[in-house]
Amino acid sequence: MYIGGYIRRAVCCLFVVTMVPINRAAVVNIKSKGAVGDGKTDDGPAILNAWKEACEGASPSSVLIPPGTYMSLSIVLSGPCKGPIEIQATGATIKAPPELAKFKTDSWIQIQSVDRFTMNGGTFDGQGQQIWHSTKCHDSQLTCQLPVNLRLSHVKNSLLKDFTSANSKHFHIALWRCDGSNFVNVTINAPGNSTNTDGIHIARLNGLNITNSNIKTGDDCISFGDGSKNVRIEQVTCGPGHGISIGSLGKYPNEEPVQGIWIKNCTISGTNNGVRIKTWPASHPGVASDIHFEDILMNKVGNPILIDQEYCPHYTCKKGAPSKVKISNVSFRKIRGTSTTKVAMKLACSAEAPCDNVEVADINLKFHGPAGGGGGPTKSECSNIKPKVVGENIPQVCLGGTS
Ligand SMILES: *[C@@H]1O[C@H](CO)[C@@H](O)[C@H](O)[C@H]1NC(C)=O
Ligand SMILES: *[C@@H]1O[C@H](CO)[C@@H](O)[C@H](O)[C@H]1NC(C)=O
Ligand SMILES: *[C@@H]1O[C@H](CO)[C@@H](O)[C@H](O)[C@H]1NC(C)=O
Ligand SMILES: *[C@@H]1O[C@H](CO)[C@@H](O)[C@H](O)[C@H]1NC(C)=O
Ligand SMILES: *[C@@H]1O[C@H](CO)[C@@H](O)[C@H](O)[C@H]1NC(C)=O
Image 1 (tube, rainbow, N blue to C red):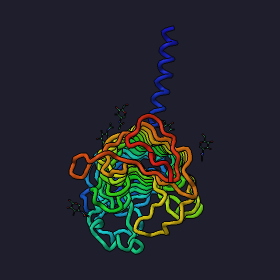
Image 2 (image 1 turned 135 degrees about the vertical axis):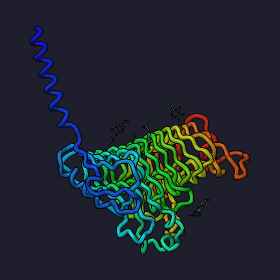
Image 3 (image 1 turned 90 degrees about the vertical axis):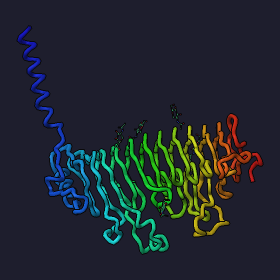
Image 4 (image 1 turned 120 degrees about the vertical axis):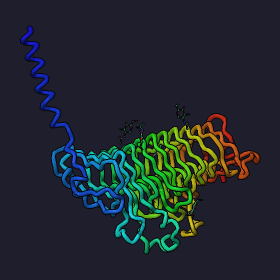
């Protein structure tokens, strides 16, 4: 018996000993590839070389950016890799050069065609301050290609956690065809008056969770382009910025449906919109359905609840003609707090494709005037919609009926 036990234990230990090296990630430190880490020298080539070695090497593998301050020009980190790959950057700050002239593409750090990607820690500072002040770029965006801080394309089954994206020159994070993405404890930070610094923009992906994250920007907190499917956003705080936005949809032909969006247990503060769905007038056909907003606290938010099917910024479109994007199966539940606009709920649906099956339940939004005081009740405005109203609602929902 004793010997048997001993042998069993030995077998067990041998098993453990041989398993450990197989499971341990092969770590490639960017310093071993020549990274200087003085915050001035371009360490992009070192990051790229470390990525290449990790990506081709034994799996799983890890690119280590040790604590310190680095500068990097644009880099493209491409797969496919031999196995799961991680960027471990806890304690590191990576800075982009402030000058736009140093960028030739629309991304600063781009990651593409990777399966099972993890990003862990680090601060990615886009140093966009000069650009936000430059009227040149914002008057003629066609001639100015502004880089997104972090662009992921065809990155599947990813986990991005405990990291910060700051002061991007353009959107902070853009996801394109990234099925199965998870963001946990992500911080996005740019001033409220920074231009076009959307937090997370997604399009054409199936499966995304964003939890426990804090997003401060000068534009949309999270924005959904066409083809966004099965997205859950929970315990996210937004503000300053423009709030959480589905769309704008319908601008282009053959857009894919937006379907299966749950936004729950979030706090939105000091933004000029809360939760909204927006589509262009005179649009191409499209679908937005199965979209749910629940348990959302609004602190001094303009237009807290908004469906806007005549979205037409800067008069860039033909108002008048209705949108052809069909919005259906939407709910707004337990949305509470303060509105800085008297119209706290506006459900402006299309005359050509009226909204169907929209539920409004347990809304409690009080007016918060500009000087801080109250200023009478909030109200709602509705067109081309007959919502299902549940519970007590402030403001009362579509009291004037539909028009
Ligand atoms: C944003 O506001 C800050 C502080 O109020 C100010 O210093 C800065 O110039 C403003 N930036 C822009 C782009 O207006
Ligand atoms: C969240 O991320 C920050 C770094 O941005 C880290 O310091 C903190 O420990 C993380 N929180 C949790 C709960 O992991
Ligand atoms: C998101 O979380 C839900 C559970 O809350 C889970 O079922 C789903 O698989 C997750 N999605 C992704 C892309 O990991
Ligand atoms: C989120 O859920 C927690 C636990 O149920 C609750 O205490 C908190 O008030 C919720 N936050 C919001 C913004 O609804
Ligand atoms: C809306 O919900 C109804 C009932 O659950 C369902 O039959 C319909 O297919 C849904 N519409 C869309 C566009 O998903």
